[in-house]
Length: 360
Image 1 (cartoon, one colour):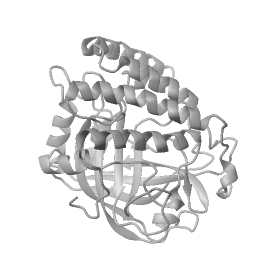
Image 2: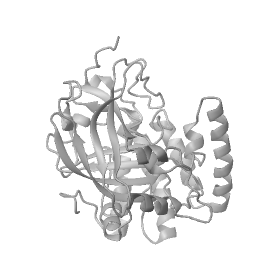
Image 3: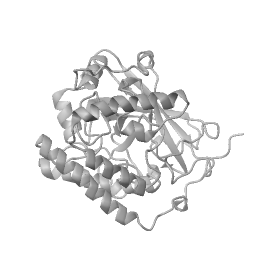
């Protein structure tokens, strides 16, 4: 029997006494990455997910007749919203695609109304996802250690990274044979070099879902995308292979993902403060609440790249209070990611802004 969903309460979160200090150290570690990459490229790029593979325009369609436990916040009533989409990989430096890393997909749903999160400018709701099911670190302290390690390896011998990535892909495959995986191995370059259009993307961390708490995911639903699931991108002698392949695919196909929600129904099996735990679908199955539609288009149109990739910021803390990010990791991502975005805007003399419409 499926349990009733847990009611949201601020007491579900457990603040740690060292959070402010860890945020300060995270900002310092991100500065190392930002300063090294700025020196390399002559401009500032994102401290995470620096390399985009496609930037697109689409439509976010909220389903009608949702049960009350799902009809929350943005999803309280059926609606159609314009959306901006960015696909990426997770490193803070712009690496050749022979170094295979986890994929990211960020959505900015435009023209949303309702009470907003503190500091959330504009009228958009951002959803930031990646193709791993769990987060790489249990808490902000562990996340800090990972970021410090990435800072030490930023701008270090791409050839060595390519060799390491090849070896780590072997480790990933060996682990998969035994029915397990390692987010750390994948983050360091062992992730399969898969086609972004065939992937399922996860929120990884929990969020408020109006009166409840949830994780969410994006699942490809068109036949063309399902056929691309697990397709390995050949990046030999093609440093931007993913971008090139994605551009060719999006020129001919209409992409669609189901936006699905998994409500928290058991706090022991579905912890708020530990995003390394996958929430059991037998405890709480995913349920579709919306569809993301991305029509065929030029996914690397120069004007669109400038507007979406260069001038726009995607953040889990941009949106409605009804979809507040929860947990230690998400709290740490607030000030640190804004710090990084502010650095990029300052160095590039190009302030980011929240677009009011589909043509930012």
